[in-house]
Length: 219
Length: 271
Image 1: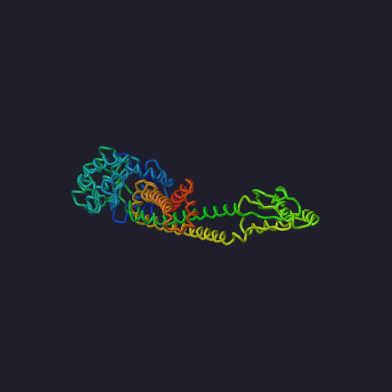
Image 2: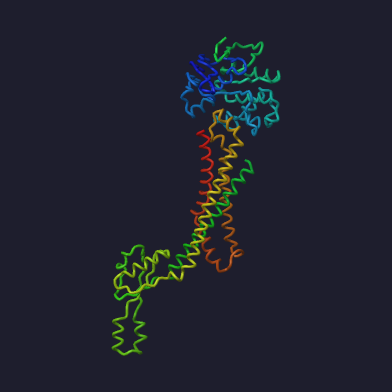
């Protein structure tokens, strides 16, 4: 699913945040990326959907070489990934339902099918009555649950989540972890989660990558 | 759809199309006036030798529709009783040939002057009378109005274009967040910009329909706005708006909207 070979990442060419990282994430893996604040966890995650370019090395995601990726290929790659952002990134002019429908619409699904899928997912994230609400009318926890529903809506091959439960109430965090576990266990979707803290009694086998001083190692 | 955005897109288009419609009308009036001058006036030539059309084909810019020989017999008959037969014979020999020339297309004043000079160089031609003095003032005034309206039209196109560019830029600025989220989900810039593309298309359609309705509305009610002298020529020209001209109103409007939206889309895509 993801193959990193000696990748270096950074916002400044002279100073890399991630140095010569080598790892492989397989289909159906559940991976946590941990590390202290500013260690480069989110930077590494962003590199998987090419929001940040590599300084050097080779990175393959869904068999796409991110070093030589064309705009069209990048769009196709992003269509096949579900992303959950720490700041939710919901479109405030869209209703909850429309936000969840977005990846489906981009993938060319019909309105009816997209709406049905959105309503199904809203039940899974325990927000069945919020379809017509706007994101501003929801709490942070509810917004993040909508963001998870959006990431799952188009049955992606890979879900990337950046601190999906940071600052959330326990109930919302539980709903999100359960959904991500289900997606991995039942649908075989590879999940990569950046987090400060892995939940206790996670109840699912997972891999853990730690980042320290720019180095990525599996523990 | 945002009504404010729609109105700010449509109003400049309406102003631009209205100027275009005025420009079309003025052009038609000028053309019609040229045709009427062409029908009413002709160049008169006095020549010592007979002239045929082929003698004059070498003159640059002289597109002759018809050349008419004015009969000398009428002049001579009226003099026959007043002069002696010897003088009459002499007069008959010496009296020059008179011709009137009608042109295919109405020439400009400078072109008419050149034609006059060229005709005077033709062997046998003694005198050439053009009609420039008769029509010059009215025609020049019409040409001046046409030029002013054309300049106004092009200025308004530029003004409209700049206004629309600003509108689209503001739209992109307002929807930056939405566009970046769509981009992160693999949506193209065109997918994200669908609302502004739809606004551009709808504005073009609405402004075109509005202008076409105004043209027809004015045509039906011209007597309320214009003096009777002007009415005949104006209404005649307005009634001859062709389908192509009406289509061109819509095409110009759509073209301008698309150029603006897709120009800025391209700029965003290249970023």
